[in-house]
Length: 306
Image 1: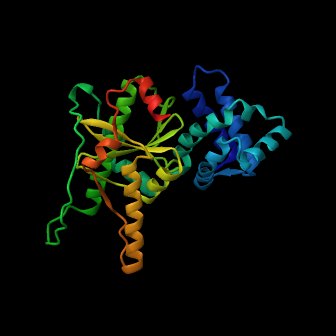
Image 2: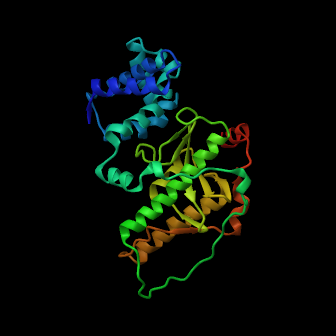
Image 3: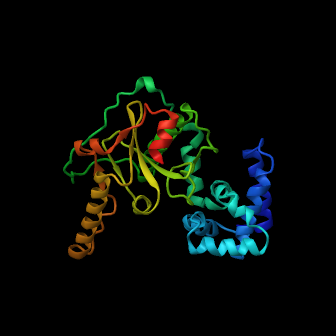
């Protein structure tokens, strides 16, 4: 938690570092955020506040929404209409969420996790020459209930998260290889709770999935994002391929429907069971719904995600 004046001061410094060659940008973004806070009548900035603003972001960006109309009236009454009309508030939101994570969005569990994984040591460089372009698939494997020696829960969790983070870094390397600029064209928001996905690509959310094993999982929040916001899946198999699975793909829509039906059936017939972690197995039926984007140019990728 930070007092409003302190948060805005640090936010302006952050903007100045992010946009050193753009005169006036830091001040414009800071003022836009300040006026939004004043509209919300807040005096201190907390993680919950930023999460609330994140949930309101679609309405803030939608000029036909009720909230936008209220903002427009408020800003006009105080002579601040230009911050809406010229898009300063909309542009400042992404920077606000990225910056806010530094001070108020990480809880103690996140900090331990980041220290354990040592994010700067997780690297994966994209190279188009190594790609096989073969979508990994898998088949259903019967569960084995025999006693086995297992690694500790913590080490297994770190291993999975490290693997996922490596896929995210690989995709970031792919974007930069095309000429996209980090913290300008796209933002790495994987550790930022305000977003709920991994990469902010212009105004689009991208959830990165490591599919080397031929399957992946979807959390409830990821399903909600896919169904209700402009979020898509990027399927990664390092040194093999990168595939785009859009949120309106038939395979994905059917899979999400089946997950919900399975859980509904379980609730009705097995009320003490909750099938929370459901594996989505990649099979040949997915091939026609994904697009191999590893060979895309910068312009092609932008057009594909519009």
